[in-house]
Length: 159
Image (cartoon, rainbow, N blue to C red; front, side):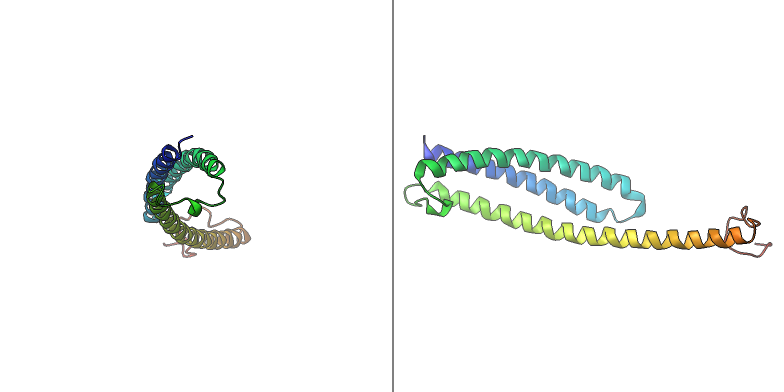
């Protein structure tokens, strides 16, 4: 087994993962921009495209782990930091790619948390509107549905 080739392959896989993470980050930013009620269907499409990138990234991770474990076993090491930087200078490139991956993951996590808060607030607002509507319907029923044909909640017959 050639450790140098494995390191090059790990770097290539890391670059592929970075591209997927950047796509996920872009999708995550777009979800944040779809705050309008009219754009929920667009948000659904964005979430589906984001999910496709996540699945692609999982395949990359599986191959990465396979090559990584093979390299660790061959070298008899426990951690990637145990690889000699002088004998295998490409390991520095792998460290840099790993740092970039971690940075992207943190940014995605931050935006996801922000998006979840925004969605929860919208759901809360929507639930409040539903409750108001239910109360209006109860009031209407208590008056024997005599205001059922009125398009507003006004009790004045003149509108």
